[in-house]
Image 1 (spheres, rainbow, N blue to C red):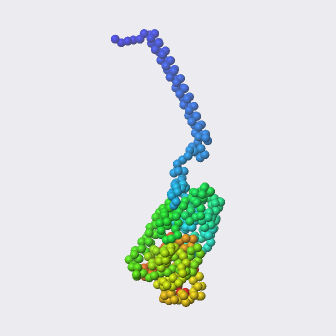
Image 2: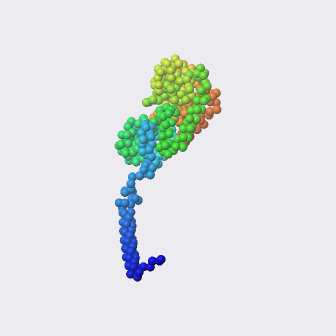
Image 3: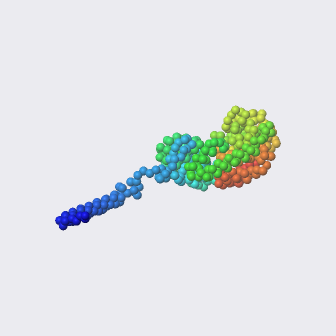
Length: 398
């Protein structure tokens, strides 16, 4: 049976439906008003300076990567926060600027220590970059930084060698500029030299250059070692090097035990037998007693040696090496610590004299030029030669 509502029931239902429809319409209207109000409020908040995320002053702190910074571990094991891209530096302490040039970072330098503004050929990294460095502001003197001058040139990073005369944290605190310490080196191709190159490659964003330079230097070590490792000690001529500089210039008495270039070629350096290490003055009677087969003279001491020869000719002429014309040059490699490019060239020249058979294929001028070009980006050998600093036999008294 089908249920059919009465007329009054139908009227009642119709009224209820109208009331429900009216309530729904009201709710919809309220919802629209609320939505508009919320949208307007949100729009107002977004456009407000206090809440605008495009306003740098109101932006939330961002991560180091987003903010363009990175962390580097320096030669002292310190974690130093530096800009992601380093474009402005100063170098403090012996070796910092030298190795910066080796690593290819010379164009980043905005201030130098006072001695870097003086002309000369004793530091070839400075010589080939002199036009740039000589005009830069002075920010220190021989490892002693001038804090205000450093702040004035506004570097992003201070590169400090371990030879500097200041604590890195103290300097960083005073300048509010990151200080990155590098080991530096006062000898030839030790671990400190390689570590300095590695850190600088990372610091300057020149990792590829640092890797290529490291590979080249390792190849030099291997070449010198492989050519000399099979030579018996009794077949090696005895060697004395004189005129070596340390703290000042020295004459014929100035020598060095474990002389860097000779160590690379396993030379029989007579100074190694003294129990000394590094550079020192020796009793000249000891040299006479040794009577070395070969003598090398550092150009730094040549003026003093030449003057002494005039007054002590008999002493020098009694040495067999002088009598036989076996006195040769070494281009000074130590000036404000060791200059690597010159020391390596000295090693090859010394080896070509001491072991002519093993190094018969070496043209010393070409080899020196190759080394200079690789480390300095330039070859100043001809300039050295014109100034009298060349690899050659030396005749005292001439």
